[in-house]
Each structure stands twice: as C-alpha cells, then as structure tokens.
Length: 110
Length: 117
Image 1: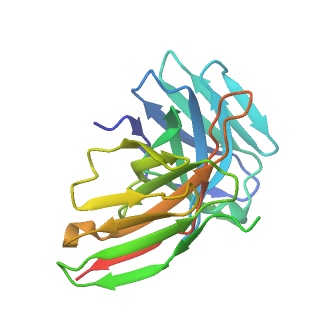
Image 2: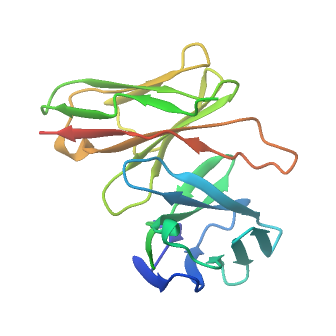
Image 3: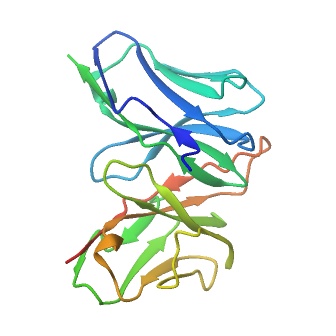
C-alpha cells in the first residue's frame, strides 16, 4: 500500500529554470507534508513543509503547493542551481512518523 | 549542536550473525525514530520512541529486530540472525517536541549501511 507516490524517477533541468517535483498521496489523515533532499552517503535534509490546512508555503527559492481535493503536492524550485542536484523525497506525517515517497532524482545542468 | 550521529557508518556481516547499531540524537530531542531505506525506495518507518517509551512499531519490524532507548537519550537497533534481505541503509532521526503548529520536524543522521553476505 503505497500511501505516497512520486511517479517521476528523475527530472533534468537547466540552471536558472524552474524545477517542479510532484507527489501524490492517498492517506487523508496526514496533517503535514514535508520535502526532504538527500545527497549520496548522507541522511535526508529537511527542506520545507506545509500544513494540510494550507495550500501554499514559500521559503526562499522553494515553494510547496498542496491540492487537497486532488491529493497532490508539488515542490517548485526557482531558480534551479547545480547544487540542487540531489534526490528529493516528499513525505506525509501523522502523529510524527513519516511516510515517504520513492524519491525523484533532480539533475540541474549548468 | 553536532546533529544526529550514527555508529557504525558501514557494517558487513555474514548471514545468521547479530548486529547492533547505535544512534545519538540531538540533545534535548525527546523523540527518536528508526527508518530503513533500500535502493530506489524512500525511507520506511520502523519504530519510534518518545523519551524511553517505544510508542509504535511497524509490521516491517519482525521479531528478529529490537530497539531500545534505555535512558531516553541514545538508542540501539539490534538485528538477530541477519538475512540477506536485511541489507539496507538504517536511518535514525530525532525531533524536538512539536512547535505551536504541531509539526514534528525530524533531523536525520547519516545512516548505517548494512550488507549481509
């Protein structure tokens, strides 16, 4: 039972352009959604979160959008930088524990 | 604040052996979580503690797995009679009490990579 799905295994964008990473979920009990970034040989690093009662949250170059009716969220990175190249995971949380998607490999080309 | 640390970073063992991993959370974080990540997948929840109490265990956590957090500080995860299917990255995370918004923001350690031969 895959409660959180990231259907795009990889995404390639040019430096300076927008990166859009997508995530779908099935569990209506999630009260927050989070995005994490992961580099090889490191643990995931928290990027940004959004409450289930909001539809948008912005932090610098990162914006997360939540569409509850579609059970869909997306992470926008503008402008994309080569240092953003990593694996991005979305996760839903209820009572603290995280349920992750499979991840999307983002590659930003100079 | 040195972050979440895990030891060892890598462990190679033979099938049937027991292994133990340690996690040191960020000080004053009362919640500690264990996750397992296999290739091409996101981390999967295994168990979590609030202080020394183990509050939830995933059905992924077979009887061969046991976790402790004896004094509410560091935690250990033991796998008995390891199998090749146990090969994975084992991640530990900790979180402070939730803020006013109610979010338990989790901070992850670098993980322990287990290889069972």
